[in-house]
Length: 138
Image (cartoon, rainbow, N blue to C red; front, side, top):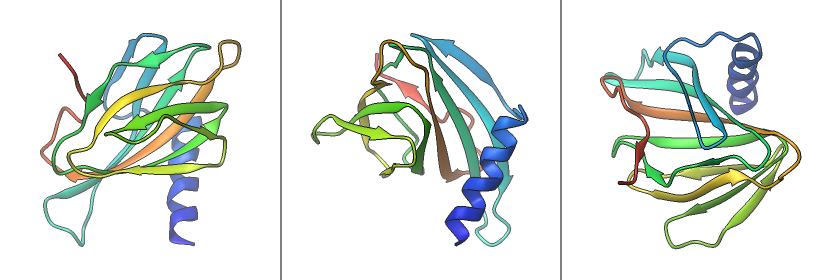
């Protein structure tokens, strides 16, 4: 129930265009922080909602996240192909979810379709002082 309420509230913020931090585009993907709130019951931690929008055929570079980050992601539209660490490339469709744990390497993150857009909402629990929540591979 709590998960449903959190996702619904973050989705409402995303759809309303309530970006509160930064907006970046690359490789046919657009990343927008749509929610940023310090957790009152967990000192030093924040919850950040990140809307990732993929154009048809769009991709994100391979990346990691801060060591403090736990991520829950749910696909809102279309289908996303994802590969974390040494796991298999997996496709997630609208309504399906996955998690990333601290230290995970996200080797593949892309729209599974060459003709339709895709969107996902990633919810981070991360140290409040983290400014860069995605670190692209070099």
